[in-house]
Length: 135
Ligand SMILES: [Zn+2]
Ligand SMILES: [Zn+2]
Image 1 (cartoon, rainbow, N blue to C red):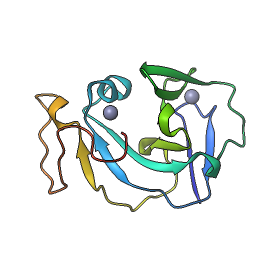
Image 2: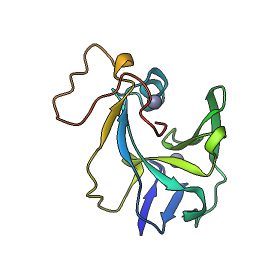
Image 3: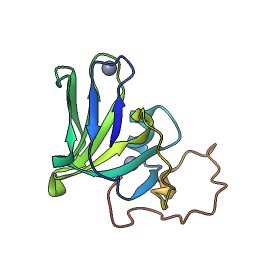
């Protein structure tokens, strides 16, 4: 079981499965949405995430056609994203986790879009754009 929350605590979630593919996305919209060099995301089946305190402050923004980003409208924390074309698979924002997670990243995607001040120094495989799963 993994649990997480937004910065203000209005949104708390529980995931009762293992997290899937973990990777970093350096695309322009992940940079904007995170305010940082990249987002750190792992896959979660939409049916395996619950919100025990409700989702009153959860909003979704369509950042590009068919791509939605869910965030807390009170504190701005990104929580997950999904593609309308595969809406049962969420890409959880790992910075929101409260439980320890020991998974290791498997990929960097949209490296062609990365900030010029962002230097990748690990050995994790890099892809110019998509690999197979969305960031
Ligand atoms: Zn919040
Ligand atoms: Zn991205």
